[in-house]
Length: 126
Image (cartoon, rainbow, N blue to C red):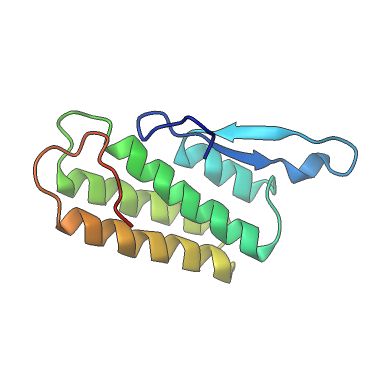
């Protein structure tokens, strides 16, 4: 995460590998949709990095869904589940991508099942 970012304004920075080795381009990603594009269009490459990018995509989805003051646990879970589907469709055969998505989905669902009160900007404990 970009230094100084908070749950309310998360930014994941990636090195856009399409430009290597001639240029070093850092791309700021703020939404799960932007992460999906980065994975699908090969801004990130390599099994491990794709899995990590997908996990950060799940984090971005969680952050997006907890910004509404009226967000319920059910709405956040639905948004996270939708994000998981979108991320998995970017590279359907990528094993590490699936692992990254499923691990974060498990953690997020576990945290959400314990949630009480408003979810605005809720921090993850794990």
